[in-house]
Image: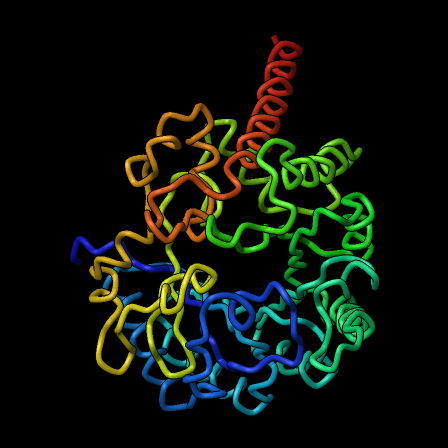
Length: 383
């Protein structure tokens, strides 16, 4: 086996269009417009080539499990027949090679009993994006005609929560809006009984800072810490929150598989509807073509992609890859410098602290101190 660091997760763009017009969407609304030149739906030929490449890579590196996330746009717009064909091709190629965890990230508005029946048959789990109650969700996540998306999402979540579908329900994805009530948002998300919640910072850069950016007041840290205290102080664990779980693990000396925090290298890559291999798609928030590698599944294998200088640089890993200010920070092992996208500035590229660096420092320090204090108290009681 070569010295190539293998990929373990593939984000597969099965459909380019979306039926919502979320104003913070990094695919359609920010700095990159390359989606316009891509096929609307991944062809079966491209899917077969992709499946073969993943199987080849998995076999070469003796991977026991791989993860495949069907993504978009809105992936359900590919249609049931195409999604079933894609999943069948992927399962067939990886049969007897490795365990294959296939999930789908959706806005939830198109879920219906027929989709859930297909996902049950093919063991495809589903994550849904939701930002809060109707008023909060519709601040940003409206349909293209301006109508509310909330009722349709709620209907989809009710289907996922049914006993026969519950095992497919992966969790909720929420983008933070600091003008909203964090406790109310969390309680609304919790009412949908997710097994996990992901809170995401709006994708932003130094050139295009996030809404209400204020390094002195750190509004994103304050918002997230309100949720953290509500979640952490509950008498029992109501759900998993990946960001908080990762920060707690890192604070106690553990490791986290995350592109957002920690010093570990990322292990996923994106494949577009035309088979082009791209860097993590959040980079589309930085500038036109920021995610491009010039490689594709028809002509290149994933080992070649892993050696690509842009891929090696983007995957990160270790404090030496960070800006000097981050390397000298007391919480760098936990924070990890934040998401690479958020470090971009036109004159210096990605060689900067995150645009969220002040928020990340406050958030990380608070959670670290809370975790260490509680661990010390437990040790004291045990001694």
